[in-house]
Structure formats: structure tokens, C-alpha cells
Image 1 (cartoon, rainbow, N blue to C red):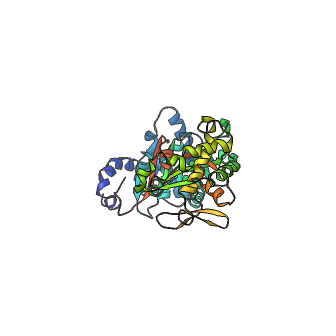
Image 2: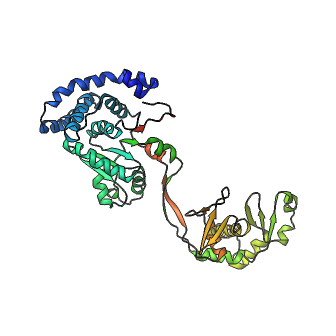
Image 3: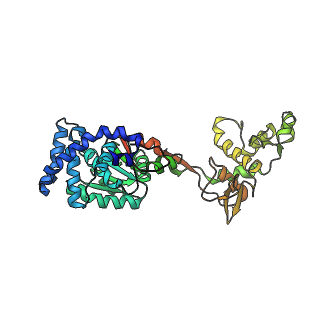
Length: 399
């Protein structure tokens, strides 16, 4: 047990002892499996599928299936799974975390549970962090799967829907976390079921779990679409608001703000502390006259009210060269903490368009979120999830 203790640590030594009987069974089977010719070895896959269909569990099949994968790897890849890799494969099959040192063969470890779980015919997803790794591993490990009679697919960006449908129909599918997640969102937006590309989310092996579920945990996947709102309404709201007279208050002006006479002297009130701006009764009367309305606050006028409110914020709260700058005909947000320009970021709910109207630059189309999900919530939908991770000295050792 000394070798395993060095690799897995004291924390996992009890877990290692629990799976060692399975490792011993696999090793006992190695000699017999090695005597099979290539066709006989390949036929083992159909035998396993039949046994599973007749009621045997994957756990029942595991020792012989792992022995077959080990032998296939020796013949096709020139690599033999070591006992520590068998342990890692067993742990991944159980839906737990296998954390190993860099160089201990995580890619090869994943072939064991991937093959075993693919025997169900429902598909196994092997998820990594970039297209390069997904393509490399699908080509490299795909030789082993195909040798054993299983199909291997690849899902990367830029593929057509029909190409993805074919890839997802494979027994084992390699791809990136982003692509799997976005395909799920897109599938939930299709009109007809046969337009979806993914099958059921049954079993996934996630490579580099810390990168995907920790570093990117707060970054949701978002599919946006063009909102059906014309820039004309932003311009009309801007033309109205820029003629109004504001009352700007700060904290010490609170008592003055409460005075009713403000409704008669000013068109709108700006509260800098609360970062709010709203029309007074005088301003509402002007809006009704400007837009020929009987009652500004009627529900049917809610779209106009929203645009006017955003324009009030653009004039009363958002300050040029403090909150944003205008550069080459574009409104760019300034980070309030660092002072850096936040390229590619836009204020939401139409505020950015209101500022563009205020500054007289081209008003970009407003977008709205059509579908969104976090990686954490996406991976929760799999029936079983395993994590294949690098060993790191400053994390708790896991099996």
C-alpha cells in the first residue's frame, strides 16, 4: 500500500482499500483476456451489452470490462493501465472525484469508466476545457474505443446542427464545457424535438473540475437575442428629458427633498445617494402634453415610462468621463473601482441605449436574454457526474 499512500495520501487510504479487491479481480483476468485475438476482444463489447440488457449491473461487469479496456489499450495505444489508474477509473465510475498528480495519465484513466458506462447505449460525455484537448483526446482515445466496437464523437464550436446530432449519437462524446452547455440551451429553444442535438444527460466525466466548476462558477452561459424595441422611442424620450429641469439632492438635502414645492418648481428629482431619478407632478404633466396622453401612469404606457425613466437616469445619474466615456462614436463603461475601460460591456435594461441617445451616437440594438444557465446547474442534470482532476498540494486530497 506504500505506493498508493504516496499518490493518494492518508485521507484516501481507506477508500483505496475498499476498491483494491476489484483491482485484484481485474489483474487476475488480465492473463486470460490477453489470449483473445482482436476479433474476440472486440466481441466482448457486444457480450457486455447483452449481459447488461439481461439484468446484470455495470458493477457486475466492471472487472472484466476494465480488463478488456486495459488489453485494448496495450494493443492500440501501446499503454497499459497501472493499478493506480484502475483505482482512478473505479472511483470515476462511482461518480466521485479522482485527483491525481500531473503525468499520472488522467486521459487514459477516463477510458475505463467511459467504456463501461457506454455499454448502456445512452452515451457518455467526456468534458474538457478547450477545443484542442477535446479534439486531441477524441482522436487519441477514439482509436481504442473504435477498436473495441464503440463509436466516438467530437463536439466543438463551429459545427452545424446535423453534425452535432451525429456526434451526440456516438457512444462516447468528447467536447468542451461551453459547447455542451450552449447545446443544452439551444436544444431548449428549438421548435421541434427532432431539431435538438443532445440526448439524455446520463453520465459525464469532467476534466479539470476546479477550472470549470470553481473558476467559472459565477459566469453563466447566456444566449441573447435582439429585442423588439425601436431606437425611435429612445430618441423621443431623450428629446423630452433633455428639456426638463432637474432637482439634484444629496444626503443632507433630504428634508428639502420632502418639500411639496419641489413638485411645482422642478420636472424631476435626482437622488444621487439612492441613484434614482423620477418625474415630479410637474414633469408628469409635461409628459402627458408631450406624448398626448390622458394618464401617464396607465399600464398601456409602461413601455414609454420605462424609456423615460432610463433617460432620466442617463441625464441625472450617469456622468460622462466618470461613469462612461465616448470614444470613436461608442459609449464605453468605466469601472468604478479601477477606472479602467470595460470594453464589450453594456448597461442593461436599455440604460446604455438611453446614454447613447443622450450623447448623440448610434443607438445599438437592445438585446435580451433568451436562455441562461450556470455550469453548476447544468452538470446537476446528469444522472451521474465524475470529476477527473489534477493533484494539487494546496487542496484537500480527494478520491
